[in-house]
Image 1 (spheres, rainbow, N blue to C red):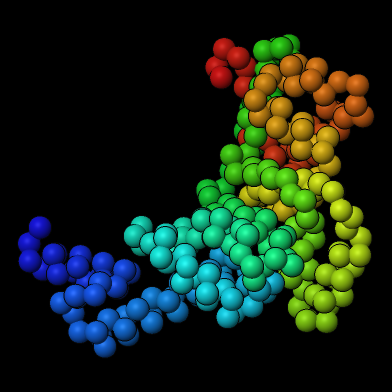
Image 2: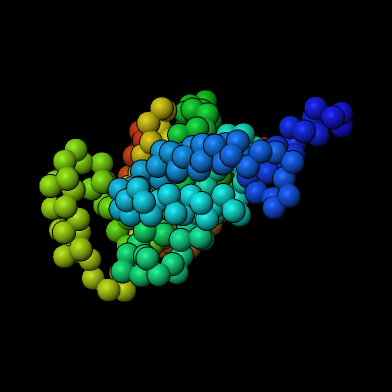
Length: 255
């Protein structure tokens, strides 16, 4: 490494992690560090829009500083930064009365990353395999952007409420969500990219279980594991094809 590269590397190190005996001017570093903190806070507000509205700018700035101390944006892409924010937020006293914020942060981050994924659509030529082979030898490859999570809180409804245009609408929606949420409830979430659009929805436990099973097993095995329920494969398949949840049908010989 030549002298110039060494200097640049040291400057970046001192900006991200201030050193007591830095060779650089303290006032100059302070300007860079203030800009870094402002950029970090701005990046989090974009990646975590629900969290930003839930906790406010000041507290978001605090967590941005905490995050900078443990997860430096060395990859150069601020959109990828912030994965560990939910972990940092978990158990923090300032959020004691708002434990749902942690799961909201997880969903925010995953949704932000999904939007950056490549557009995909169902490979129609594979549909004929459903008529050519038995279910024991057939697998469904789901949309690779499909993301599933479970929460104790109605985080999809909370996310939707914070997309409303006015403060009054958001407050009314959140109040209704709180009133309708009972202790010990479980909420299942499905998110994926459909073309250029992001689809985020609450789904039933049955639907959640099915998506988990079909992502791991043949059609026949998955159906057997979910037998004696009201699940209809035919109805689901039609909806899944229309909504771009399936990428392709695979025969076991080519899986």
